[in-house]
Length: 258
Image 1 (cartoon, rainbow, N blue to C red):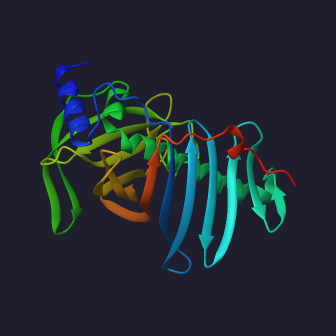
Image 2: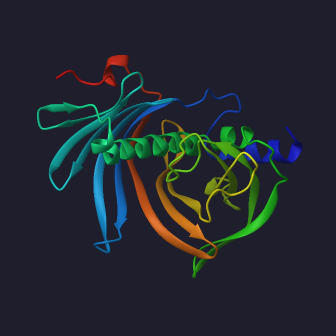
């Protein structure tokens, strides 16, 4: 790795409490509060989710919305499932496409949370990384971070909202100029030719860092859709509690029996 990249990766690792030879984080259990914008109602929807995740695609969620509890997940062998009342649904076919899409979105979010918890590894896995630069990042009209260290490259399976979960994105990492913690990630989905596959990108802002299991981790993720200079808020994820490297038995993610 080039010296400029190695120095930035080392600074990121140190700021997040990660050793240079730290093992990758592959699983977690977390309590999330997810706030999403409802375009039709022009209001915010808040959902509490208990998430258990194990890479690459094992997922179990308990969702609490308006007093109603729903359970859903991804069986790595049998696919997506949900429990509705006393019925176990396989979520296959057109009738369950929306539910299956929601679980696919949950998986993409969990994969990115794992990446955000270990930004030095994310930097080191960039394909075709460019030079480390400096760039201002405007958060609001009144808040701008100046001269943020940045680096750009390609990652697979990145965007949270892009439907193609195995797609590639050109990403730019923004590092806090004072704390050296990961501040933001901008992702533009691209095709095999390296050209954008859609006009919009995603911007994820990381904040409210707190110490957990000896690591400094973000407890708030804010996701925007970016179109030129315009930003549309899509989702805010509050990580209210997280346990890293949880050991789950395979049956924990298995589709329940009827």
